Each structure stands twice: as C-alpha cells, then as structure tokens.
Image (cartoon, rainbow, N blue to C red; front, top):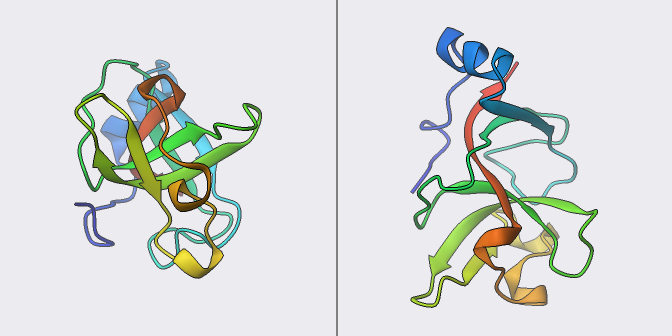
Length: 117
C-alpha cells in the first residue's frame, strides 16, 4: 500500500524514462486524493499496459461512464475476475467505485510511479 512517504519526487531515472516515452505526465485536479496528492500536483505513470497492479497502488484510469474523464485513485481491491475497485483517499470529496462500481483492467491507463516537480 502506497503512503505519503512512498510516493517520491521523480529522480533522474524517472525523468529519463519520461524523455524516452516510458512515462506519461498527469496533473491532479480536485481534492479526492488528499493528503497524498493535492490539486495541481503532477505525477508520472507507467505506460506499459502489462504492468503488475496490486491493492494500494495509485493509478490513472478512464472513468467507466465517461471515457474522456480521467481519474487518479487508489486500488482498494482486485477481484479474481480482474475487476478493480478504485477509491479516493479523501472519501468525502471523491467520486470512485462506491459510486460507479468496479472498473476493468483495460480502463487503467497506468500506475503512478512518482510526483513530478
């Protein structure tokens, strides 16, 4: 499970991966991931679709009802059938699986690797 201390600032290795297209950059909007991620924080994510996922990972995903809306959430659970439950850390201000249900693996864009500053 990722904690505030685990999510590090992007170092030179992450920046090289970004330069070579192995990372993508996303900006956080809203308060759903406080206190880990604040509005306007930027994160780097993996771009490989076959990256391993586990409970506690922070991921960027497509909203199941609006494919143009991108979410940053934590994985609460992964079912045997591959369905993934996503939650926001600030549950009072989060739209997550409690509202829209589980998401498929295909809706996961990537796993957050670091904060980009």
